[in-house]
Length: 130
Image (tube, rainbow, N blue to C red):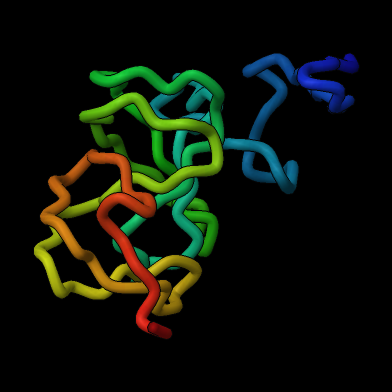
């Protein structure tokens, strides 16, 4: 199936939940006999304290499925604010001066307190380069 949105073409692969299993690389597994569904948030490294939103129009209050791509584990977290696709969400409370870790790397410092589940962007995160 192909989908077109914002002048981008994407190939969408749909596999019935009954056919999805750990033996098929790249597909989410079943947990307790129930399909996992598509994630809202990706966390690349277990050391990360932010995740990246991978759905459009994420609304405040959404109970997000987050997947840690390093080991394919998952957890749930509530979005406290609407957050655009590609932007970050805090996985824990962060205080001013804390270091933000994404992809297992230092990407900057917190300049205003950020609660777990809140949008992380240029209004509360700055580079350490200057």
